[in-house]
View 1: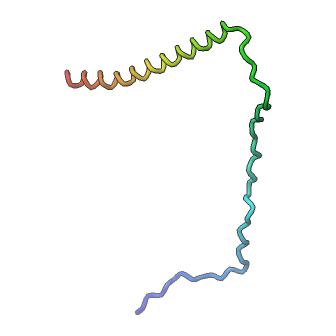
View 2: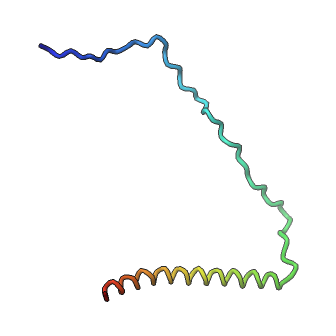
Length: 86
């Protein structure tokens, strides 16, 4: 006896709607920063002491970032040495 398939293909009475070319949700508007006006120079710091402080803080932040990187490199090395000595 041959096996009969119990699945039947059902003919759809309504055709599927065509896929719309327009997305369902519109894209948000593009926002751009305005370009600086040509011929106008940016405002300089009126006080040279503020410029010095800004440069000193920037340098200090860079040093702290370098120290942090070095400490992160040392920590795994110390944990490996402790595990070998135990």
